[in-house]
Length: 101
Image (tube, rainbow, N blue to C red; front, side, top):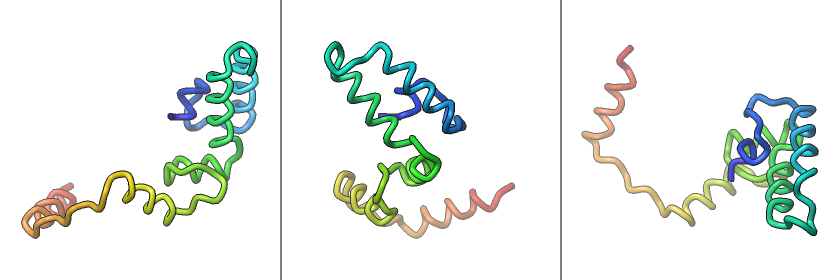
């Protein structure tokens, strides 16, 4: 779930814009009438509610607070498995492409 899509904002939005979008979206989703949407909005807002959480979420794609980059890597390995090592020829080709202007 991308919190920006849920709240209808851009990644460059500031705290005030995020809060306004969150409060506006809550008008149509109360816990009694639409509990799934209400929970989705709350989860999205919690992920990007302040600058520290937002930076961590967009940089490491982890939830805040407390998820470190190491935790994100461990989650990735658990979900995706350990990536296979590249063959030497593939690695050389990648480096050649990166060096080209």
